[in-house]
Amino acid sequence: DFTREELMTAVSGQMPERRWGHTLGVMESAVALAHRYGEEPERADLAALLHDVAKYWPIDQQESVIRDNQLNMELLDYDRQLLHAEVGAFVAKERYGIEDSGVLDAIRYHTSGRIGMTKLDKIICLADYIEPGRDFPGVERIRELAKQSLEEALVAALDSTISFLIEKRKRIFPMTVLARNDLIRQIS
Ligand code: DGI
Ligand code: FE
Ligand code: FE
Ligand code: FE
Image (tube, rainbow, N blue to C red; front, side):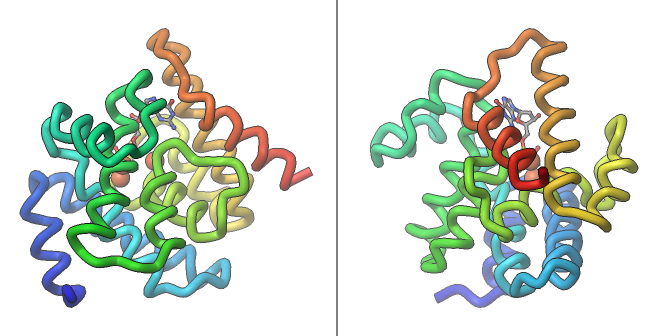
């Protein structure tokens, strides 16, 4: 088994300095959200540590992991940015021996979201948007919303991604739209 320290060394070695800084930021934000919203901080920390582990793997390698292990093949029809989440969950389990399926799911769905997001899913997905190093239009409003409601903040975050994709005339992974709809349903 890997200690947390060994995992940190292994993960940081697979990404540029800047992305490792992002990962540390997501860990910090995820733990803070866990305390605020009653999730186990250790699980938030672990999922955040591993969430982008595959982000800088070559795309053909990410695609191979998905094909060779019969993971979610639908992802291959959409933006390549979606692959690293699915691959990351696989790697966390198979290479790093993570057995907590809730942690693995939080990694798997951190980019796309999903219907019926767990508290841990929401925390990791949201922490990914609001970590201290993030600077995109609207991030400050999402940080404020995150103090009041995980769901309100996450809807705002997904809306910003969906708007960005529309602006770039990219296709939207349907699960992202379903995730947003489901969160709005949970709020109202
Ligand atoms: O890995 P990070 O950069 O930290 O963040 P992420 O895992 O949330 O990746 C987000 C990127 O994925 C973002 O630049 C938008 C892009 N993307 C492309 N198609 C989709 C998508 N994101 C979502 N949620 N849904 C899509 O269909
Ligand atoms: Fe990511
Ligand atoms: Fe994200
Ligand atoms: Fe990230």
